[in-house]
Length: 83
Image (tube, helix red, strand yellow):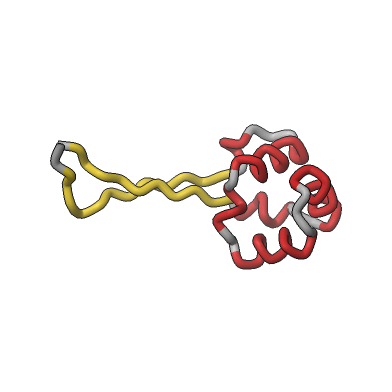
């Protein structure tokens, strides 16, 4: 039997707090996303913040490994999947 788990990945709050207009400008050039779109993602904590290309860009801007940018949470599901 395999026990199912859900893994959620979010940007660390201290990373979000470090994102200012200069970082948004760099993210715009690195991801080709509109600055206003990026700001909306931050404001509403969209899942797109943890897309790999976005994390690579943040990693390059802050000179940090991706694992230092995100929080990972595992939660066990109630049911057990039988194989």
